[in-house]
Image (cartoon, rainbow, N blue to C red):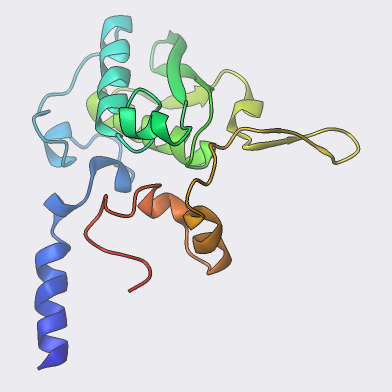
Length: 182
């Protein structure tokens, strides 16, 4: 009986609608109506205006990642993404500020969102590969810069210590209905 109840609970919770759009990479060529992005159902051509629009959508939808959201700003997340350049289906973006998530995760989520909305994109890269690094060290292997926002409640460190990927949950435990520590 207990396993039946658990299976019913997981089936109810683990529906495609229960996941945020940035939880999984979207395969190329899949129409955005199948991405789970609520209210967004049309692909866009690759233009500068559309790239800027989709980046703003991405920032709005990822409300646990970017410093434009009050809750993020309150805990020291100041991260932002900007369009640097594009040439046809090749897009270059820049990351600035401090992120709670790993910068590589931010790049992956932004790239997945851009590709879902503008399927003709071939590649989304950073203007400087160094922007993907969370910790910057000098030639003596001394930490020069920590680009992560503060681990305001110790969760990131605790999840990493216990072998969990903190980027799957994000900085706010109440964001998802599932907990890693159940």
